[in-house]
Amino acid sequence: MPYLLTEEVYQVVNHDGKVVGQAPDLPGEDLIGLYRWMVLGREFSDRMLALQRQGRTGTFAPLRGQEASIGIAAPLQQEDWLMGSYREILAYFVKGVPLLSIMEDYSGYISANYPAEVRCLPMQIVLATQILHGVGLAMAMKYDGKPSVAVTVCGDGASSEGDFNEALNFAGVYKAPAIIVVQNNGWAISTPRHKQSATERIAHRGPGFGVPAYLVDGNDVLAVYKVMAECAARARAGNGPSLVEMITYRMGPHTTADDPRKYRPDEELEIWQQRDPLARYRRFLLDADMMTDVEDEQLHEDVVAEIQAAVEAMESLPPPDLNQHFDCIFAEPTPQLEQQRTEMLAEIGYAKS
Ligand SMILES: Cc1ncc(C[n+]2csc(CCOP(=O)(O)OP(=O)(O)O)c2C)c(N)n1
Ligand SMILES: [Mg+2]
Image (tube, rainbow, N blue to C red; front, side, top):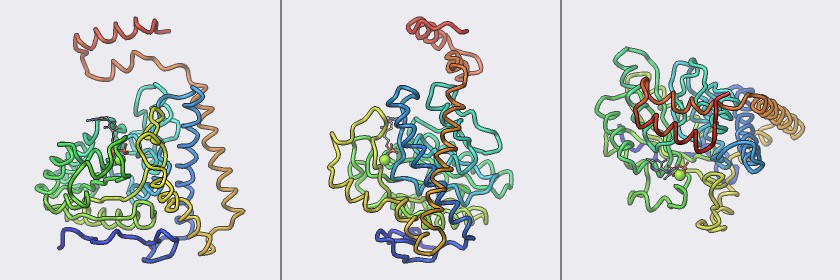
């Protein structure tokens, strides 16, 4: 089998909205379902950004432009595992993590209050660590004879970490049922993609580790879906891991603490605005007579109402217990941790109610 499975960037619907590949064999309602998730991702991200600006939530990492990342989780089964980073929250929603849980993560509550059955690890902030966790989980499932898959997602910047490369090596050697996805959005805060690696493609790393790799248009939800479904089927059949590079773009700031205009040319953003994943998929559905403008408007209204309900639920929670952040690190806290707890709580004058 060739190790680089797609020489060209794989697309189903190209940048101009033209259908250039075979759409996945899904009923119409599922195709609309994918669109609803994408709309939810955009509206949720924009709302969180606004809430942060109003001082109503903490630092947030917007995902505008990366909504086709729902294609990472949509073909997965309940027993499959998913672990990603701060910008993968939309895939987490698709896997079953409630909106409120992610809002809590970003608002100072104890992290990863996720239902156990959704099989998502806490979103990872330490770059690429989750790739090792994911490959380890995949190896464990293989030893247990379970036909499940562990999907682990990171960014282009994270691909330069030792953890990323070690995880790929283990995945290849042990033929782990793992899918390692890189959302290459062009930037790692202010560091451009070309400074991460001299390889033309991040996908080219896969063959070096004996891991088959795909290159996919990360703004084409149908293409992402198809590639992920194929990788999952291969892993379930005992044929081991895959590396998937999704070419996409972060349209907004890295986080609410960043101003991309300081390091990124406006023309670059303009090019990628033309490739907006949401607009492209919307056009596809309208052209195929699967959705009308009126239905689209209704769908938007429903999504905004769902987000509003989650915001109200978040804002009616009692304030977070800041002690929990220290309690959840080790079974037995270290003396250093206790010292840090005392100092931090004294600094902010915090007393547990
Ligand atoms: C090990 C480690 N080093 C540095 C950081 C600081 N940091 C946070 S996000 C980030 C950029 C990550 O870029 P990328 O992997 O491309 O993901 P993106 O933010 O673009 O989604 C850096 C350097 C960190 N969180 N972890
Ligand atoms: Mg990046």
